Structure formats: structure tokens, C-alpha cells
Length: 245
Image 1 (spheres, rainbow, N blue to C red):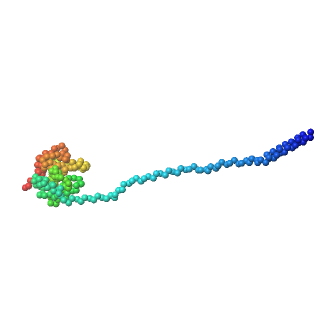
Image 2 (image 1 turned 60 degrees about the vertical axis):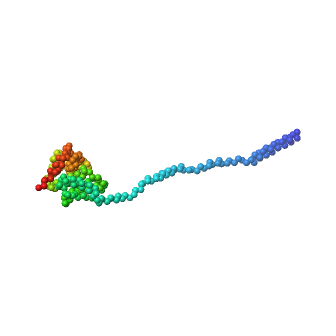
Image 3 (image 1 turned 45 degrees about the horizontal axis):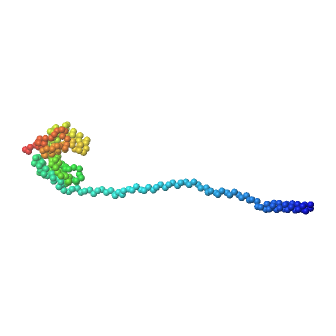
């Protein structure tokens, strides 16, 4: 049947055309483009931070006290009066009444400053044979101190009068003290301060003289267990001076 053949042929042609068109259409679709994989974002390489050393805290300077320039203190002027020394005069006249070997008057030097270590001092005999004394300016005199200083003067006055005799040796023997006064002096030289003072033979003499004048009391120096008899002691001191012709 020609019509069928023709139809069939047409269908076939149409089919071929359709397929061709489809193929052609497919051929016209853009081929997929292979895009490059996106590079990973570059992470900047950062060197590890070297920690900066923490700044040391600034130390506050230790406050230093402002010291005023050291200047030597102004030295107090020495006393130029002997008001304190004049306190000895009453005691001097009492001593002279008992021991006429003392000159009519002593020499009283200017007082010593109030910061001096001591109360009163005997400074020997002057060219005229007068005892020389001085007293600390603020010292209130006592009989014990006054007669002690008179005792020092008496030793010098007697020794000068009887130069051939050792009056200290006589005193040492009379008191019954051990060994000799020279031994005691050597022992005292190994000591200092009060330990030395109480052993000095001259201080023992002066203490004995003070107690003899007062009529009682206790020696501040070593008595070596030999308690003093004030009345007998005064008699002994008077015996050291030869009677006037």
C-alpha cells in the first residue's frame, strides 16, 4: 500500500529529522567547563610573637633622710667664777683649826663645767704652799666630799714637812692593811674606774681623814676588813706633824 509506505517513509524521515535535531540540539549545549578548584585562602604566616620582657617595675628610690651637715656643737664656755668652790671655805677653816699646818687660806680655782666627771678636786700645792681646789659648778658640797679633799692636801702638807719619812707607809701600817701601799698601788693600776679608785692608797688616806674629821661614817675605799675608829684616826693624823719647837 503505497500510502502506508509513503506514510511510513515520512514518519521515518520525520523521526530521523527529530533525532538529528535532538542530536544537533544536544551538540549545541555548552560542554561543562571544569573550573579550577579555588585555591585555599592563603593564611599569612605569622611568626610566633616573642613575648617582650615585662618591664621591671621601676623601684621607687628608698627615701633617704636629709641629714643636715654635721657641725661640732658650740662648746659651752668654761665657768669664770668659783662660786661652787667657795663652798669649801667653811670646811677649810674647820680643818685648819684642827691641823694648823694648813695655810691661812687655800687657792680656789674657777669651777669646772657641769658635765665634768667628778664633784671636787685637789690639784696640789701652789708655789706659796697653798692647797689648790676646784669644784663642779652645780655641785652642792657635803662634809664628806669637802674633808676628803682636805685629806689629800694634808698628805702633801705633811709629806713636805717631814720629807725624810714615808707618811703613807706609816698610815698603811697603822690601819693594818695587807702588804704595802706600793703593792696596793700596783694592783690598782691593773683596774679601771671605781674598781681602781677604791684600791688607790691616796684615796684610802683621804677617806680616813674625812671620817676622822666628821667623827663617823663608812669608807668608800677598801678597808680590808679593818673598821676605822674615827677618834683614834684623827689622833694618828695629828701625830704625823712634829710639835712646834
